[in-house]
Length: 436
Ligand code: PGA
Ligand code: ZN
Image (tube, rainbow, N blue to C red; front, side):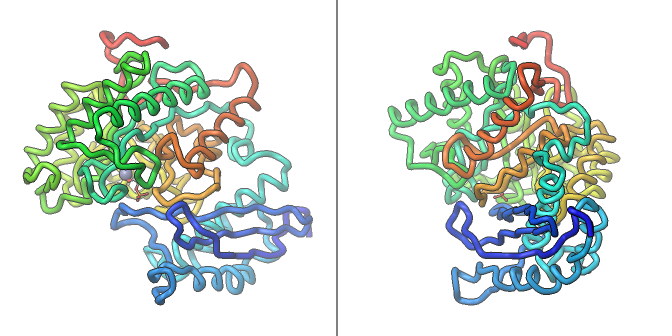
């Protein structure tokens, strides 16, 4: 028995940022060292994701996780006790084998995600280093360019606007802390503008303002005004990033924009998005089309070549195979990486490695249901993903992650490196200028 031998794996029910039950896992080592992780939960999920195991009983609207906890406390702990916690890949493969379903429905994607991340945390703790350092394995790291939500919509705001995330990327920042300071001013400015216009109805699930806009494009105009009001230059200091989350309102090549009372076909949808990219300083669009609309993805990515980051979230569901297929198709040029879409740290890393091989941009991402767990920040830094998406600049389950990034930056000292515009999978147009 060594200091990194697993003694016990323990699950417990805790509560996520929407007040729903979720599973927390402790991996305890023979040495007494412990690693801990909490599973997040999505609300706008892709059909290819690992599925959460929920009890389906009357308690908490069927959302309870007592079955998941029982799996951790009995079969998983029996299987992993005595194993070396440093062997992440072998442990993850064992979890996958124990589950033996393509969508991880037997043990639960939530169960496996929490166990796998807790194993990673325990391995780092056994080595006496933070998770990012454990994952970096001596390689130099770069703080990620943040993608931060200002307005929330779609499934996170009662479908009040169709588009799910209106975000900013502080592409002109020189450091991670500078990037957050810029966004703090933009978030505040947007709040002031919204209040003045009487268009604010609180905050959405990820902390962005819950907006009362008359059209989706109103949000884009307001975002540009907020960047300006913050004293920044739209497109060179801070640019716009959108998550259309189009699977939420599109199917079979048709897209229903409820807010505007109209339906678009895939060409109409593409025209609208191209017009937005022409008119506003947009550098990144996630899930521009539904996950079943492969032709539209391919045509759009071709049309936007050299101008835009096109991210697959529901389209790729953190799957190395899907990333590989999308690279062959040229269906997008970036992947969103959510550990609980894949189910284990090893599979998430495999999707990242595949994306990197394809020259894709890589964005580590939180879910709309989150907690105080900050592991994803460490994944983004330790794996040098280059980009991080956590939600907005409010609510502590979001701020815990941004603040963790600040601590990591500080620990790296004055020469820490920050990923700027260059992490996007296209080149900055000469005309855009910029401060970097
Ligand atoms: P989620 O969506 O609600 O499934 O976490 C977030 C996203 O679409 O990026
Ligand atoms: Zn998304």
